[in-house]
Length: 91
Image (cartoon, rainbow, N blue to C red; front, side):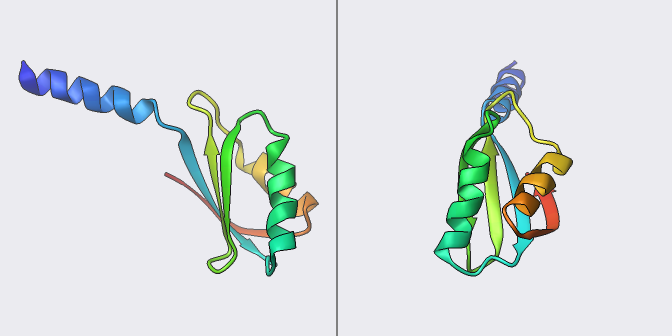
């Protein structure tokens, strides 16, 4: 019974966290690049927060608990900001 309760708690705790999407972006080199991408994604209701790592050329997108972003939408927004998507990974 304890194992069942622990498993249930673990499952519910995982589903309550924001989804993380890691996007490898080519062409980002400065803080203005990061600001441009942040501006594009801040207008999207599914996005809870965003972290741009210029050194690793990765944009980490965190969505609201019950929301998700399609790869096509992510690619469109990155492209509109002037950059190219190398890969998209979901965690």
